[in-house]
Structure formats: structure tokens, C-alpha cells
Image (cartoon, rainbow, N blue to C red; front, side, top):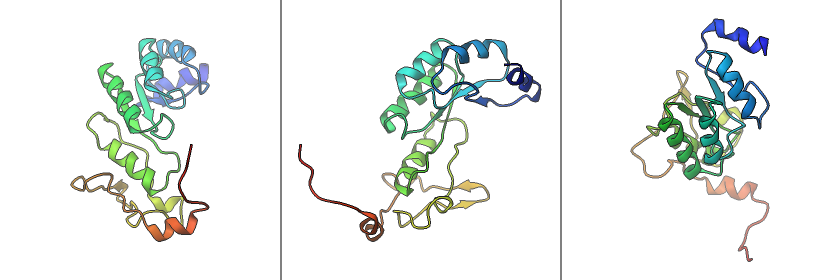
Length: 172
């Protein structure tokens, strides 16, 4: 705790997930002892958890990862909870292909998201991605076309087929 407390002198924007991944209680206690805002990442698995985190003062910033919180609808709920609690939100990724990355970029462009995101260009993780139009970084910025409908990802059917192990109809 003393090491974490000593970070206050650096006037950081926030410190991300300094304690155990599923802990809200001790993050809340820590938040009362330091001036550096706490950002929760792994602790936030749903809008319900985000609400609880803000209710007990465990954080003032949330790193939203749509893949971890079950998609865009839940991500938007979390972003709204952050805003309604005078907190902040940003979007992080989890090694998504260009399809998932496009969803992350669309969420990051939403006006409920007020901190810069953490999204890398597709080429950082994949030699061949599943999209024809991968995101590229220019001057440390990934530019997206906000005028295009949907997520803006054009799936490359040939690459998709190349990596498909099994396809067909599913029955329950």
C-alpha cells in the first residue's frame, strides 16, 4: 500500500487496477487514502459491477473492454454509469481481430467515452486479419470513418474461409 500511496506525488491521471482483479472493497479503501484516481479494468465485468464500484467509491475511471463485459449494449450501460457518476470511461482491447477492433473503435468514438482508448493497429497482432480494411495508425492516431454505416469493417471472406475450421448450421 505504501508503494501505491507514494505514486500520488507524480500527479497521475489515474492508476489502473492496482489491486486484485476481482476486488472492489479494497479499491474503495485505497481510493479514500490516495489522491490519484483509480481506474478499474478487470474488476468491471458488467454494468452491475460498475454501479457497485461507483456506489462504494472504488473507482472514478473505468476501462471498458466490450469482449469482457458481453458486448456493446453492456459497454454502453457502463459508459453511461461512469458519466452519471461524474467518472470517466475509456475503451481497451483484448487482442481482437479487425471485426472486434471495429466494434471497440465505434464504442470509443461515442460521446460517453471521454478518455483516449487503447487500441493498436491490426498489424500489431495479426499477419493476416479477417478484414479487408484494417485499422492503421498515423501519428499515433487510428482514424475511423464516422460516415460509414455499421462498424466500418469489411470482412475478407477469403481469409475467413482460410481460417474456418468448421461451418454449417447449428441446431439445438
